[in-house]
Image (tube, rainbow, N blue to C red; front, side, top):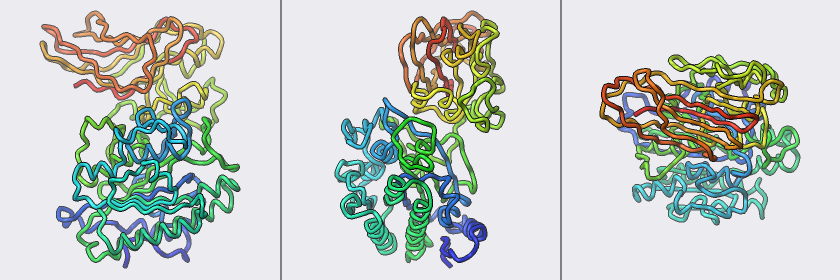
Length: 504
């Protein structure tokens, strides 16, 4: 029996349950001898909520038996929520401020510096057999998936229609996966996007999803039919570049509708069944491929990716289950959970200088997630933290002032005490998203053994979506160090975001 779901004549729930119980890999005892292989399938403009509504047993089973991470796309001025930036982020493992693609013109692309994951494999070891098959031809002609890939097969859905060209893509993928020996393969299917643009996300869109689900099923059956399958360890990754507004279709804007929702799904070794992580980004496809194939990511590549199966260690993410629905905010749906004043264990927030008025959610440093925070006010770069993941800390004087009494802001986020050794150098690493206006100031401070604050860095100009690394020399007699982030001199100005502090 094939280890992949095939039957569509049974009830959907039964099909999902049966398929989820099957595995893509040989028994664990054989794992050490298996050869790792990867198939990445891209489905353009696919809303996961619509997958759930459709009769899509293949995708359903992969999700039930694997890891599904969802996230939101960036907005202008960083990039449109469109296909050029989306597939560039998937391919390169970096965000648009690095790969340079902001829209479907591909102008500004930096694929020489940030090549696709298949090209990276070729550069790391030319013996890898790499394959890309697609029918949005520009992904080859523009170099999103580059010329160094061993086999590139290009069809033209724009000229010839995506229904027929997707069928050709599928037939070629099935043939190569069954009869040849690719180590890493990328396959693109585009008809879901075209249908949503034409008639929205209703019945025809659902039908297109079901067709692509069947095409994916054929690819998985081809893998299972390989004569060497028993000695191989296959990872299946499925993803999309953007979503579509519901029900009208369309994308490219900056709302928090379905158009900005993306997802990465993986089933294979190490990907826990049914896991729904909060720390996923679209750029994580590349890191997931590299991890499965055992390729070490060189820090010089400057990627924005991690394996989907690896969880962030940021203590802020531990607050996710305790996030609340809105208090004073009115533009955020009442069902969306996304803020708390309660700091993680060992952390604290000093609000002693804060006024009693203002918007409750943002009184001093608060902990929030991207959906809740960006819904508070769109088109003000809250969507463009880029390297923020999961839950993060925000000091937002702009939103705080949206209610009477919130005209001043002075609050300090305080870390746990880290053990240190006198005479050593410690590095503070964190992600920040800081927008400057007026006299607002952001200070990074350290205190040794509970003593006086020492200034490490002062923010008085934009520092957007930046990964920081600040060094601190530990003085004589010090055994502990506390890190503090003070945001002050603010009165209806912008904001400061901190995430993933690590002291090394």
